[in-house]
Structures are given as C-alpha cells and as structure tokens.
View 1 (cartoon, rainbow, N blue to C red):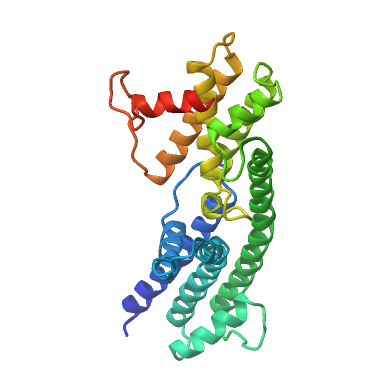
View 2 (cartoon, helix red, strand yellow):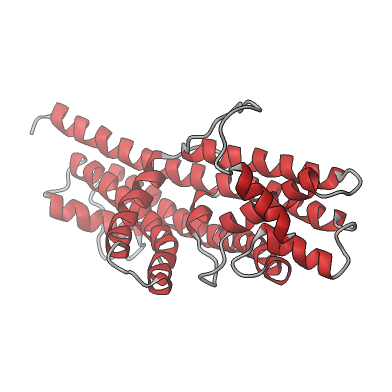
Length: 299
C-alpha cells in the first residue's frame, strides 16, 4: 500500500480511538444529560437477545429475573466496547507506522493496552503509541472503577424509597391503598413529610437517570417493585388527595405532583419517549369518570 494509504489507515485508527475516549469521558465524567451514540448502540444491541428470550417466557418472575441481568451485562459490554475500539484504533495506527502485518499490529496494540509487555515497539513513533495506549488502558479501567460505585449509590437511593413505599401502599403499590392506609392510621391530614420526601426523590431520579443512562434499565430487587410503578402510585395518590378529598389545601402534595411530572418529562425527553408537552384541560384522558368515581368509593 502507498504512503497515502498508510496515512489514511492511521488517521482512521486515530479517529476510532478518539471516538472511544470521548464516548467514555462523556458517559462517565461529564455531569450533563448528553446522549452518547456509542452507549446507545451498545445497550441497544445488548438488549436484543434478552428481550428476544423474554418474549417466550410466560412466568413473570422468570422473565423479570432474566431482564434484571440486562443492565449489568450492558455495563460490562460498554466497558468492553471501549477497550475493543482502542485496541482496533491503535492496531491500525501501528500498522500504518510499519508493523509487518495486521496480526503483529494487533499483538502490539493488545500488549500495550493491557501493559503485558511481551511485544517491543520497533521505532520511536510506535513506542510513543504504545505509551499512549498503555495510559489509555489504565485510564479506562480507572473510569470504570469510579463509575460502578456511582451507579450503585444512585440505584440504592432510588430503591430505598421504592422499598419504603411497600409499607404505605402495598406491593405492587397503589394510590388507593396508600390513601386507605393513611385514613386507617389517622394520618391523612399530616402527609407533608411524605410529599416532601417524594419531591426530593423525583429531583434525584431526574438528575441521576439522565446523567447515568444505564440506571433506567436497573430493575428493583423484588419483581413486584418498580421505580416507574412507585412514581405513578405516588403521583396518583397526591392527585386524588388534592382533587377529591375534603381537606385543607395541600401545597406539598401539589409541589410533589409538579416535581413528578417535570422529572418524568425530562427523562422522557432524554430517551425520546413521546408525550403531550402542553395538555389542554379538555383533552381526552385514559381515566373515565366512572373509574374515577369508583376509586372514591373505595376511599
């Protein structure tokens, strides 16, 4: 191949390495809701076999156990994709700099990335590439080590509130069950702390679930629990309390409702989920009047 061809291959390799590093840094380090193409591709392709298998499982618990492994597997595949892209990119660079074959370039790239040291670079440019690749390998491992505790800390905060809701609203949680239990213990007029805690929870999941996208796919430890179901039950209960129960105005419940729909809207925006951004009072809704009145009878 001509010198121009070698240069093009080397530039292509450099572009692959830069793509992998930028994707890793934006995914792990940048505290903003920035979509990353590589991260989306990895989770999309990792999801395919899980959901294909889940379609054939009728038992809910078995299906939930299978899908619970999707998010951790996606994280491992994401880290693997970073490493594979760096190896591939540096392999192309090494070949463009004079490696005798692609096999030799691959061996040199892998030896440098994992700091194995069984391959010695033959020229100064190759030595420089080896040093850079070794630093990138250590940096990616360090990013992954820092990333996992952050994910599981956010997951733990989310699930503490979801788990605590079981004592108030049953399992799976329901808005009517929550209000009935509050009525039975005489706590319906003193719910400000409940709505205040859930207002903070909505703010927390908005921040964590758009800055750490994989959190959305992490399922609760128990099949009957879900952060989405918990959010719906709390918002339904707050709405029933505000709209249909003869109490003084509940500002904390109203603030919780607003925090909830703002949080869920922004999560939907990040993941491209459709919703009506400006609903009118006379727009059709999924709850009919008879269903609404039936819920009041239970309360």
